[in-house]
Length: 221
Ligand SMILES: [Zn+2]
Image (cartoon, rainbow, N blue to C red; front, side, top):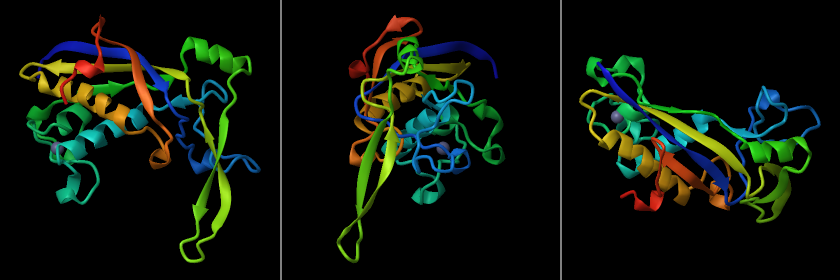
C-alpha cells in the first residue's frame, strides 16, 4: 500500500462544562480525592486529555451512528476489519482480523495538552480544579448516599487538538469525512466521565484542515 498524503486537523478543544477524565486507581494518593482527573506524567499535576480517550470517543460515536457496534451489536468495538467499514480502517482493528488490503490505522490523535495560555495560568496557580459533589440515590431506601467528590477541569479551559491522518492510494474521501463527522457528533455528546450529568461538553475552536480554516457546522452529518 502506498501512502499518498498526510492530512492534519488542528485546533483547540474548549470546555463548555467541567471535564472529568479519571486517573487510574494506581495513581491515586492515599488521602487524596477518590475521583481525581488524570494528570500528565511529564508535566506534574497538569491536566490533559489522552489522545486515546478522544479517539475512543470518536470511534464509539461513529459505531453508534453507523450501526457498527461490534460482536453482533452486543457492544465492544467493531472488529470486522473490512475495507468498506466506516470504523475499522479509520480507527483500527485487531491484528487477527486484519485483511492485507486494510492497511494501517489511518488516524493518529495526539494527547491534548493545555494550550500555552492555560498552561501558564495553571503553573501560576490561576487554574484551580473544580470539585463537584454528586449525590447518588440509594435505590432501595430512596435516600441520598453521601456525595462523592468528583474533580473536574473547569469550563472555559482550552487544550490543543491535533490529528494526523494517513491517506493511502485508493482510499476515498469518506474515511477522512468520518473523522469530521465524529467530531461534530462529539460536540453534541460528551468527553470523559459523568457525561449524562452534564460533564464533558466540549467545542472545537480555531479548526484547520491541512492549514485551511473550517467550520464543523459546514460538515454534513
Ligand atoms: Zn468494522
